[in-house]
Length: 210
Image (cartoon, rainbow, N blue to C red; front, side):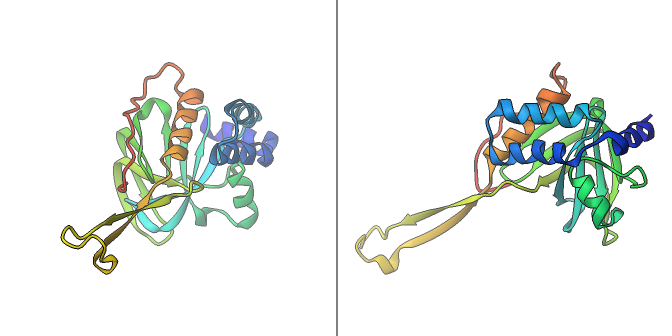
């Protein structure tokens, strides 16, 4: 079943549709335009794909995560040459590419947005191997879908006894993740792939952590 779906995508899929669908969400384009692009990409037999970092597997390797009507698929970057990778990034996955994991939406129990990552909690464990040979068996995947840009906040604490002595100031810089971007991604996934809301979506909160 999955092989036939992927083969159909290779024939009818247009990478431009998948790129638009992803990029509209990344840039925060008005939802109506973004959703139209997603409908077009999915209706053409393709997926919407992101390059990604899977921190619990290998923080120094790149993966590709593709979302379609059936579920999500995780690939190693090394599974593609440059030409097939360009098409895969547009959601048109070569049927010869072997996914590390194929996860049906019914097997996703929860999607939580973090400041830098998403947590996909699963009903069963999957085994994922990186291009560098790192191998992990997980029932929760912590994934950074590339594209969102974070910011930083500077907190200055004055010396209580000498507040005008600037050289005594305690200056701390906190990196803040692109939570708004991650929330756009999460709610777009829910809209298209879980309209009946079987997947739990815990409230996200902004902080300097994951």
